[in-house]
Image (tube, rainbow, N blue to C red; front, side, top):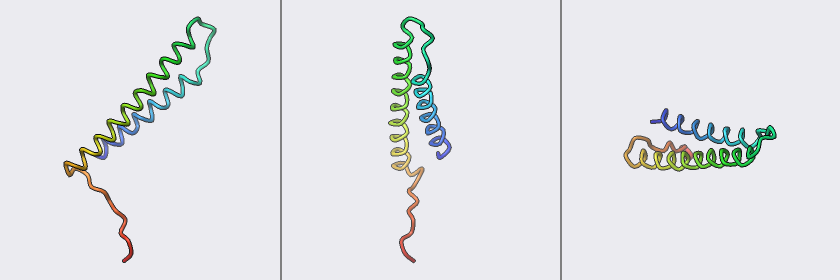
Length: 77
């Protein structure tokens, strides 16, 4: 379970990195390059949001099914 969560988190970070790449990439003077870059960046950000929501729902499902449990820090001794 934890491995799947870590892989999904890495996928979220990968989508964020690709959006940053599209944002910082320079235009080569091509016609419509800025619109294409904006579209790719928006799609990468949409994928990041979808993955984040899916990860959150997966964590809630895992907790409800008993696959994971919160590890609380003991208070006092």
